[in-house]
Length: 128
Image (cartoon, rainbow, N blue to C red; front, side):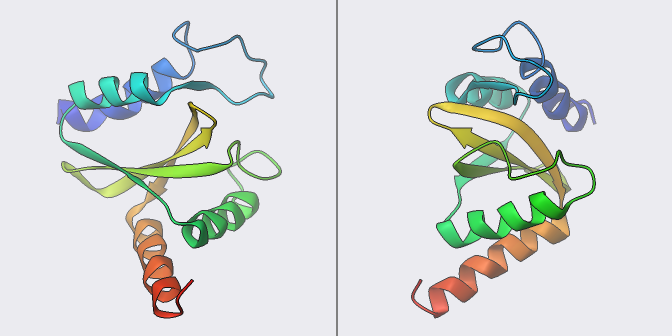
């Protein structure tokens, strides 16, 4: 049970504390290096971080832009990674990528993860 709580706590703490790569304002995304995030996540238990294809990223941009719990506008990155944990089948995190940084982890439900996978399958079927 501790592991299920540890990853969100580690991500939020890392991306909102002095371990930030740079000082940020409230309007700027909170970012850290992917290497630091991977180290923190690996200490919290078994998880997977995977790249998203362009169709999946574009799909998530639209979901993010329309979600009532996200800031106005597009997400804080030009790419995204999907983090899932073996001990949490109900949720995952989208990690927005800005160059070599990972910014503002976004908690998403299992249903959205399933839709992300479906977008990949449909784009592959169409040869995109």
